[in-house]
Image 1: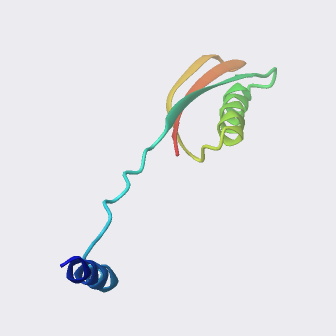
Image 2 (image 1 turned 60 degrees about the vertical axis):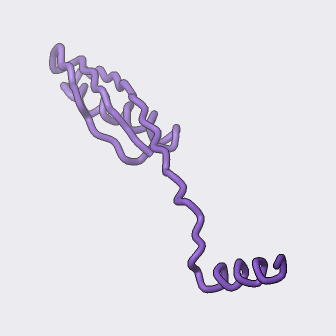
Length: 84
């Protein structure tokens, strides 16, 4: 009886009828805040560069800017939400 069960189990495994449950992929989400200031009005560009640099250092590549705060052309802050 044991040999028969073992033989059927092996045959089923070889045919691919026994499958393992799928592993759920966990997605990590993190937020980054970039700050920028410039005497030439490039604060928003510098703020985005700051947020991008922080995200890349942490290993995140899929990011979106969900809020930006421009106090003047010389000071800006951006908020990025990134997933991996």
